[in-house]
Image (tube, rainbow, N blue to C red; front, side, top):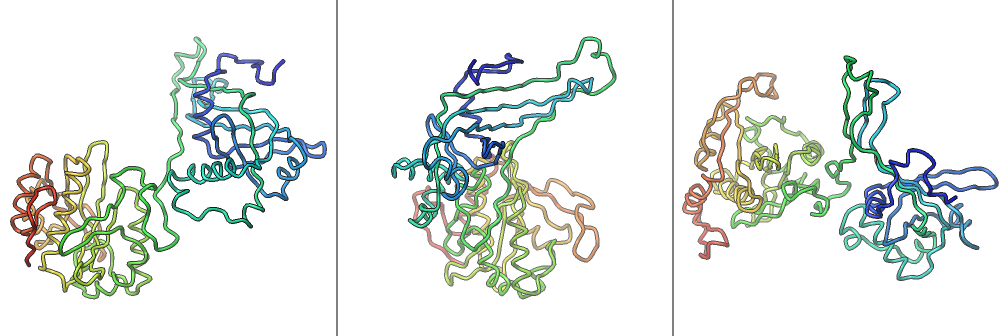
Amino acid sequence: MSRTTPLRRSIRFTDDRTVLHQVLDEGYVAHIGMVVDGEPRVLPMFHVRVGEHVYVHGSTGGRFGLGARDGELRLCLSVTLLDGLVLAKSQFHHTANYRSVVVHGAARVVTDPVERDTVLAAFVDKIAAGRSADARPANDKELAQTSLLAIDLTEATIKARAGGPMDDDEDLALPFWSGVLPMSTVRGVPVPHGTEPQPSYLARSPWLFPEVLEGEKVRLEPLSPAHAQELFESSQDDDVWSWLSTPRPSTPDGMAAVIRAALTTADRVPWAQIDTATGRVIGTTSFYEIDEANRSLGIGYTWIGKPWWRSGVNSESKYLLLTRAFDDLGALRVTWHTDRMNTRSQAAIERLGATLEGVIRNHRIRPDGTMRDTYLYGMTAAEWPAARARMEESLCWVSPTSGHMSSARS
């Protein structure tokens, strides 16, 4: 009897190769079983599928590398994706929805340089699509330390369960909740280790990527820890922080902490505002409360150093953000939140063409501990063309798609 022949619950087995490929491609960790000196061993390993082979890699001095060096190494590889937890009326029928693959075969050491390079690039691209072109490839020393093994997918078992609980008829009237708790692996917000800008391929959606936005007075570029020193220097005035929900940082390290918080907030996309005349970092702004499903977002967390107040930078910055939201992303609605007592901010938002939609009472706690009522402003996609025309006339700056030359002024 074949090792892939089902012995029980054959209804859950399938020979669909598409499912086989999906499980291996979606899963990140494979468990590899083998016998070493008469004892069973199971190791978790990162894997990648290329065509009809699945590959794993390890040290040339490890058990895999040594075991396969002089011939084929018999292995069993398994990958399971958990899709949901199934709660039934009875404890006995509790189970899980899943997709799983078990592969039996003999591993061979990859020696062909072309196959080796293709597979190593595939490993990196599985972490993030496009990453192999954006990172240093392995050097000769690293390649000499790496053993790459291939396992053919000819002998593979594919098993899956989907759907709700399968209660016994006599249990259906019991007063217990039953159903499915869906489970999935979700990528979080990238956390930077260095100061380089985040690459676009790490964004889960264009809505969550801070595209560089170029104006005449200001350039918006992805906020990063590299901006901390100049951002701190530009914020040395208490008036800048009067209405912000974050206390003024007292050191550049404190500003770096503010930046890290912005970068790790799931529904926020922060930019640094750069003065194009000097190249200095003069402030920051963000998209936030991003709701791609309903095509809406907010503009906020905005401040600019006091020397650049009333310079036209803020207006041009908002023009760039609104163009990004409505024209590039196809937003249907953009909102702003501002402190009810911040009349300066309210006037600036109203000049953009936004409409006051209401007051959110006791919305936030200010840094001094008092409660803040928030004014909610909004602009719809239908209102954007008229607002854009007014802003372009005010700025004497028109979008590249309008076909006119720009003539910036203060």
